[in-house]
Image (spheres, helix red, strand yellow):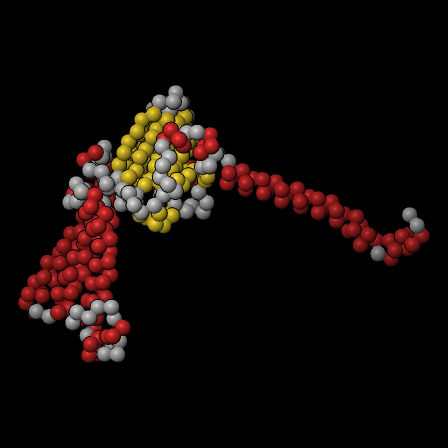
Length: 315
């Protein structure tokens, strides 16, 4: 060490020691950052295996799903088994299962394992119940494939389970690992939502009972309001009651369409109505809400300057 260095160290020994330790701290920070980054990448891109349990109640499948978009809707189940397409499956980021309006076919791959000593019966449920076609393929360890097909362009009678959603009963033997493939597709284009849940039969039945109670309460209350409004309209004979009756009727039809009750009990026999009624009901609901508000508030007299900007002028 030179005389100048000894002099500088004697003037500021603490700074000299900190300068000597700085590279060590920098190295440690870089190592920690690399380790953390590696764990994040492994968790986001590594395999996710869903372990089946004897009791499952609406387990969200999003973290275990891998997705492949088929823009031309030409890939078959045999095609997606090829290594080229297998490598193109990717995990869902930020739990984003909705993909907007799409004409593509969407494939989902889920690896499941039954590590228990007993067979596990379970149900895979697709809650977006206005999808035209949903195909499920169950591939076991021996290479055997079983297929199920649902969707509102298919008759409701082919459903294996009485439900407003699209539910697929599955079985996984003890100690076996399986791969589940699903294909979502619309005949032309539609709103794609790949959200899935898994339940055991007991939990699924309990959920259906509770859901049926709430559906019945809401539908019964809506019909009661409609009947009450009808009598008021016939006795008082004022326009707001007429528009409210139509508005409430549109709300009930939209509810039937979006809840799946309409497909299950009313128009499940024809794909044309299954496609048209949900869109018509949504448009009618919001249109009649505007018209009822306009009639109830009497905007023709109270705010005549706003009337030309209203999209409905039915009086």
